[in-house]
Image (tube, rainbow, N blue to C red; front, side, top):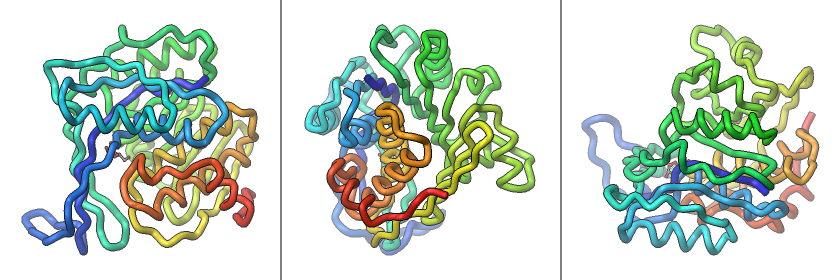
Length: 296
Ligand code: RIB
């Protein structure tokens, strides 16, 4: 079983010709809401990938924004451990998506901030814990410590970017970052290679958008090209990568195979709108893999 612990948001999304600069107003299309949040998105991606049962620990408000998130998680087959933060609003994210499919996201964390160390369920039966950084850092660190001490594989998607202590990194088995997050963690390193070598975790994966991804795992280095698709909306693509990767590893796939599956799923997630709504089924990913690129 896989435990994902992290954020759940309702995403308020508008598409516009471009993402506005500071002080600029742009006219967009109709606005829509979608279930999102990095933790919930990653749990849905794990569950859709199939294999191990996926549980999500998340905090939600006692308001109308929680219901579509809970419905989306239930629809994907995720077992939800909900912390009901009656005094706070469910987390929300305000997202502008450009004509090129790029996004700018502002999160109002709300209830996500009430996720506390004491909320961690018993870890017996779980093989992997998947974490992100949209909930309090001390909670993330406490969960990583507990899981590491009980022999789970701890996977941290260090998004959004922030500085991480050596103590937290010591409890992480697999760290997943994009280029901006990598630079924030390895501040002062000249090259990407130097940044990748510097961060002290057993396995580091760097997602590179349309350039694919690279990984350092023990003594091995892997490069996976991106699967070419017509990009509509990149929201949730990174989360799809993380959730699919952990699901694949939990099923015993090798790192190159897991990177390939995660890359195919992330590419497909860019071809439709929204976060959880765009995460592909295992069947769609299998079809993509049948025609896709190999890891080198
Ligand atoms: O990674 C995409 C997610 O970031 C969105 O769903 C939004 O809720 C923010 O958490």
